[in-house]
Image (cartoon, rainbow, N blue to C red; front, side):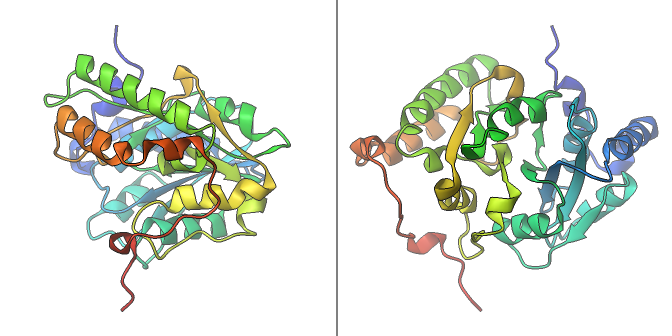
Length: 284
């Protein structure tokens, strides 16, 4: 039985010239039909040098099935490849952000989005058709400021389906325990949605290399709780940006070493985190 994301994976890693014209035209048509003039939900894709992965992500977004009026927007974050050309070919409204960092890209998206609810999307990730509506079952609640979800990796020649199953199971168990006291540490930008009205009252950090998503979630806590959705039908599938060239075993060992230091901390709330020097963006 084929996985729901197999057809998106069929063009993942390919240039526009390698993707059938009929597929590109289908994506373009579907994206245009999704756009509402009065969106309640904004789905914003940020991309940096994602020329060979962006089309697959947009294909999945073009097939979202939602009862909400939505808009789908793109941000080209100072890409050096033909990422902008993908947005153009597929007819997606997009904005160029010249300042480099996920924080600047997400801030740009928020500045241009019109929806009350804002969904962050990463360009190397596939999203299931019910993703928006399932996340909204949590986000639309009056006591919730933002929501996150679990995610999966697609298997390849270096990562077996069997290995991924156990890797994700252990990771998900850890995140589940951690989220009770430190939910902000469980948030990932590729599976993050929030109330845009609240987010515009706080700051999206642009001075750090990673963690701007968790930092934003922490800033949103005064407006409502950080909720989590545990539903496999809402689980996006992504590549290996968070693992890199490591094997699953190497990544697992590394995570154990990092999380094993002061493991008891996950059982206590915290409202402020000190920045590590290596995560700060050097000002020029």
